Length: 462
Image (cartoon, rainbow, N blue to C red; front, side, top):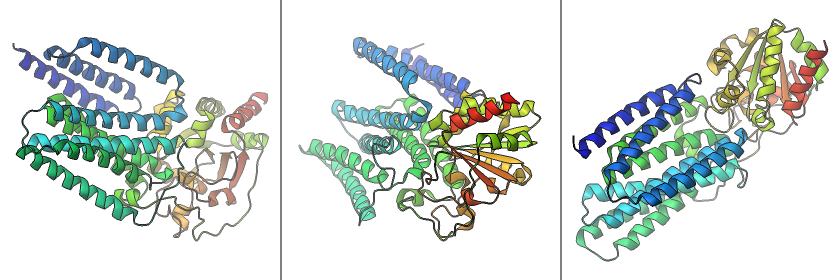
């Protein structure tokens, strides 16, 4: 069996492992195993590729493996769960810049260029550059190094469109120059790289922080498409397959996120969601009714059904473990306990699922938004812990609100709502929440973890 045939047979095995791993990632119960299976597939692909290429300098490969392992192990140890969204954004960016470098390297080593090779190099560089710089901006917004508000200016859409068309024209000029042997083709190539990086920045800065879950999944898709283009440029089958899988899954996830927010991808990219702090046309009626941990204990102790609705505030407070402890206590007290998860709660898709899985919350207790809304009117107590925009009744009640029409968890329809929150500040979208003023709502102010611990303490006293 020659090395070419062996390499492609291993690539097929790796591709199958990728597909099985990706399928398992769709469920919290199998996600870890799916991640491991996909990693094994990638390991096989990398090893067989290195063995089949005699020109590789293994000293540099070893140095890269050691450096990457150290950085990865360090990051895994020190990066908190609240910082995971920005870490994912960086990973997307690294995937993009890697594809750009592959395209750049291919440009240097190729001696003859045809339409297909030049086009794939161009796409790898363009999409990779946009992914890299756009992901850095998303990371800055999530890490609060850059304002989470949309950065808008007059003529922004026109400028973005002009730059994009200019980049396509530069790509056409590159192809013509390479085929005709003109000496200034490299200058055009560098110009394309610069334009792609600028496009990535300008594409993400007008997007508000509330749309970051959508942006992260979209950038993830971009990184896969860039990888697929790079694979086509160097004619590597497994890179083509892996890139296509990541690109397709990212697009599907982006579509799911958009549906969860009742918005189109065009509206996300160009709508400037969250650009202004507004109450819309919603009239704020009622008054805030603060409650103490002791009073909260009495409410929960008498409840036969309790639904927890987590949000980013739970991640900030690292309250998932204490929340699970409270849930266990309530079950021992005879209550039915469930955890309602909104698709875009937190700062990235699946953020809340990951946190609750870390706290060993049983998967069968996690309930999706559509399912919980069917029975929420019969729930005795809904405990909102760090969530804001995803439970805001303005999405149903205020046509002037930026989030009007967005599907939410209808916690205000429960018999009693307890909101754990530090203050009355608006959520990430910058929109006031009428839920806080509802007649059936009680506000438990303070750090979420400390508040839950205080409630647990009251249970233990009884």
